[in-house]
Length: 299
Ligand SMILES: Nc1nc(=O)c2c([nH]1)NC[C@@H]1CN(c3ccc(C(=O)N[C@@H](CCC(=O)O)C(=O)O)cc3)C=[N+]21
Image (cartoon, rainbow, N blue to C red; front, side, top):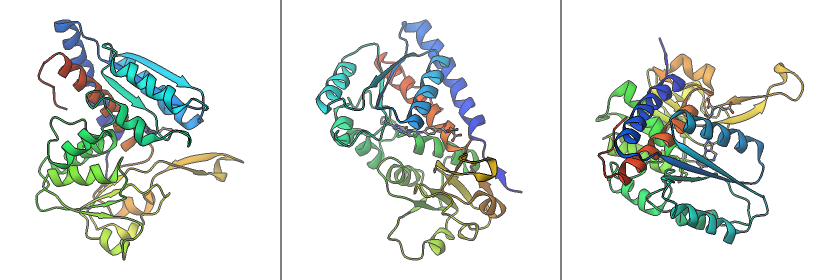
């Protein structure tokens, strides 16, 4: 039987640990973990994610602030806001929601966030630490970190002897994911749009991670029987069966087909998405513990 990896459940596990560690930190040091989420513009999908991040942060007992800036905000104003958050002692984690409007240089904004508050793990310092195996002291990007916890539930921490294929080479998911799998001793291949015979390569994977942003691209016959499939995609597609103009969420994997072949698979929704938010809380907690000079709890 195929095991459905329940992201909501595992995320709740992580969040329970975060809540407990937050109470301990507050009780022993008076430090309240603080997170700032910055959003530029009114993209409705982004608003939904940002709202749920704020809600989870408050559930964890964090201090949570949101800055919603106008679509026309200048790059200089955004840099100034990030610098003020860098200097704000009540804030341990800063997240600037991506994508940013075209007139803003996202790379500059990401590098402006202090590496010590970079809970997204996108800053060069954190990217470099993960690339050199310094995973413990880095902020690990939330989606790959959450995916690794799900993989750990199936295979344990040591992936020696397992072939992992990551489809997608983004800085946000594909590359850090590959580095984490490598750090866990998997044999890792990164595939992308220029890869020759992608289906055949995917069939070599004991662990297949789909992070391409193309709805239902990974088909059932790309999956090795018994493999673990991690679907990072979140795509909204038309769902005429639900009524005129309605949509539904699907991943980058053709779930009904792939679920028949896989040993374990993450659904969409309810898979990697909830884990991403949980890891954002875990990273913010980690940052607050570091500020307090206390050993960071592990999840
Ligand atoms: N700096 C930055 N960091 C991010 O981590 C970041 C970002 N920018 N920009 C946008 C994306 C998207 N993202 C999601 C997180 C959780 C769900 C999630 O929990 N999704 C639910 C479904 C939600 C729904 O129904 O729409 C699920 O998969 O079950 C989705 C999307 C984080 N992002």
